Length: 278
View 1 (cartoon, one colour):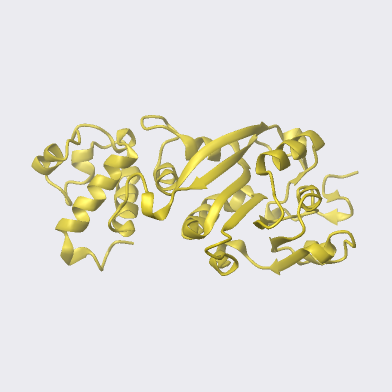
View 2 (cartoon, rainbow, N blue to C red):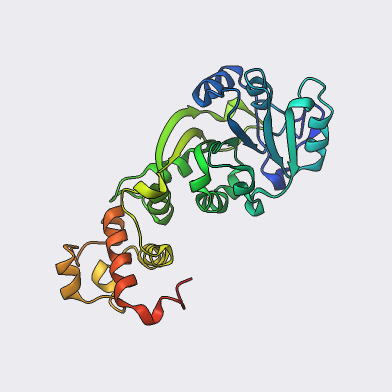
């Protein structure tokens, strides 16, 4: 059968649909998530239910967010699942996840993410980390490498710094293209993201807009030195006082150093705090 149709569903490439089919990988993922009845579980893009069904074998309710109307309707007609599901037909990049969470029952979010929206979706989800216990996602291996990268590596960039600001990143399972239908052209990795407690951030920023700006300025000019990258924002003497090597490149700075720069700029550029940060 053509990989344009899977289990009677015509694959919509514009939605980035690659359906997980390997039963061993599915079992490993469900074991990694370890769902427990009573938890506030949310699946992004349930598709044809490869993860949904085995998760529902272990719990009594599950929230799913699905953009494809045909797939959402198909889920409503699964007699063994419909009574346990709450289905939202929505674009996850615009979805208010905080509306599903309570202080006593934070979200556990999981899913096989479309590769074409992974970056904007992650940045969207980072805004809700105070309402989230953990997140488990199947993603492009290259993307997970970026999330988990160390300073000085080619994969290290703006996404790395912001992801590690909000979360502990734990790659869990590497998955080959043959585990999907249709098979993607790249390898995948299943990753766990554990949000830091908002009151116990390892390196708290006083103004996230400044941190975002410092990352953007730095990684847009990653071959320049720190001194040249930020010369309009901070002088050589101050960099030395902050113990940041002015001859280093931004890709060599740690998360702590990016936050240090952002906090200094927040404290010393008050006239700009409310403009030109985005």
